[in-house]
Image: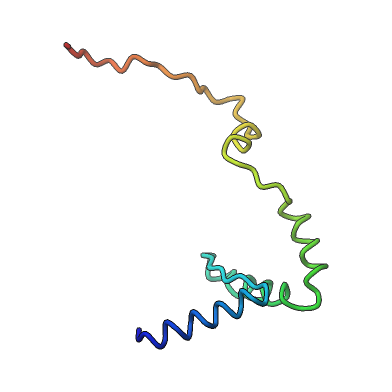
Length: 92
């Protein structure tokens, strides 16, 4: 790509950022690609606040870390004990 193309893209992304927009890239199944595009377009429009409320209800607003996710996971029937004996005879 030519240097002028890089400058043009950088300028475009800067304008988007100034408008309060973020450029993101996601990977979804092909069958959901148009749904994600449509949702993104709605989030830029007049119905954004209503859609945002519905999506937050659906996916939740908590952003849990690994520790919280593990604590909330149903691990009751899983044996998590560790056997330190690896059955290796090592002479030091």
